[in-house]
Image (cartoon, rainbow over all chains, first blue to last red):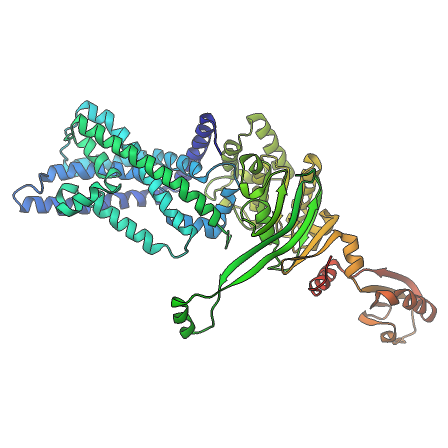
Length: 271
Length: 331
């Protein structure tokens, strides 16, 4: 099912536009989502700032202001790596939506990708006032050089792409079993610990840092956040972005194989 | 494969379904030793459909209709048998094949609930690569026929079931498919909506010479649209032919409706002529065996002051019921 890049671009644009229109429908839900988005990092920030102050001003090289910087960028990275919930596959299969999508002459991942790209547009606009408030409240320390600012979108996009593919792949579990909550919860628990979502990886024990090096999670949170903090050298950034790209390519190939198996297994029961 | 639009040869689909006795003990036992049984949802059916035909695909719930439609549209892999739809093998799910078909399932929605249907249609245009002019023309025409002009601008979640179904139909046909699989497209709709959807299907079929395979529990759909019907039961094919032939073959009874002149308060014993369905002072409805109908008619005309008499087949619903009561019948 190969498509020209023009056709793909047209599909991404149409799906993205649909996501924007959908987001604009729900003002209250968006407000609640923003509140939820802020609460999580603010809790981490308050806890770790307190710990830093209690330990003489620093934890694993992070001052309270640097923690504030970390979690400030966290909110933007979280906006961007936000992606399809694997649970939605369960819903799609149950409601018969997936059957309909499989009848289209296009891989369903393409419309999902366009949709989630479009989703970022209103969400980023909503994020701006939130970021301003956080800035005023916590006075973060950020010292990026101009090249960090230019490199950051690359890391951000690769983080989105990687997390999108990971969650899409995880959703395929629903093709084989209906009770998927345990699998998804385990995944998100692992992500929380090994990604830098909960806390910068330097603060974690050595074994977590070692394990994280072999897992994809840190490339979806920790790396893009760090790339804007201004503490990374150019070579570290290039090496990191290449690792992100390698993970994207690897997961993409794995997903191709899994998808073929999943479709063969799909029996459309309950659609 | 051939010039037929749809070819089905010895098609089979067998599901493995878990099976266990009732109760806690059986539940615990099934944790260790799972038992499954084979369910033959479709059991060796064969038929062909020509381009432009509208065929009713009938059967009771669980007969295998939807499973067959899903195999024909490439959503299910057949366990055995051969399939060809518009010259393609459906389970290969090639782009060229998917461009030519549509499957509409009643009460299943593909439109985005949160935005107006007209905005979802734009996504369909991109997916199917429909040229802008062709898209606009097809969309506006269908919206006009379905009388959806204002409704397509409302978020889909605000539409009634019937309105939503009409909007779904438009979305499903925007790419102008040659082969339509319609699974209960009028289910749950009121009579007016049913009629409009029927008219739309007929219009589409005539305009594009599209092949339509339609399942419906509403015989009005079948009578209005389908000259030919295929009946399946327990996954097996029971009948394939014209609707009139189905009635002829499976209807063992005839309905006689008599109107009589005033009988001065006398009530004749109608039971001796056949089964009395209803009896009013001057009007009687009788059910008689098809083979006895000519003799009974002659006796009625000779014995009673009949002013009007009609001989009808029973309602199609009753005929279909009698078909389903004949599980071992072979085509």
